[in-house]
Amino acid sequence: MPLSGKISSNRSVPTKSAYFLLDECLPYTIGDFLYELGYPIITWHKEFKGQQGYEDTPLIQYLGAKHYSWITKDDKAKAEHERDIRTAGISVVWIRGLERDKGKAKKNKISNKDVHRMLTDKLEILQQEVSSSKSARYFLLSFKTGYRGEIIPIEHQITLDYFFNKHLPKLNRSNKPY
Image (cartoon, rainbow, N blue to C red; front, side, top):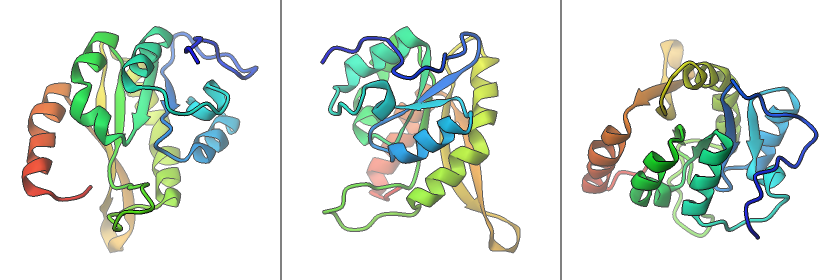
């Protein structure tokens, strides 16, 4: 199924404001819930009417044409699509700590509930950062332990060069899971 470029809901996407697409590797119910509350997010499930399995390169091109930012945890996209991301000029938010493969050993550091909390807390801040920038922005979204041990969602603004040339090689050398 070709990517049509049309939003499947009745709501209009702001033209001057950043809008995020939640990738299929993340729980779409979280994004749909946040969308209904008025957050600047749409899920692959709404956008593509439940169709799954789009290849990353056409998806990235689609996001660039729609001026969407991408929220993903997709390891393949992290490892293989620097050029596509640059060419499309999209902003990307990588979520750290969520592993969705049910057949593999548990590497989870965060739950779906944590993803919901991170996006609820940080999505509007990320929207402001992306919409006020003249170029693509890149973020790692994760948790840190704060005062009294509470878990605090944090966003780290990074460069694409840092992400692909320093962050990923460091992870690959250490074999540490997110």
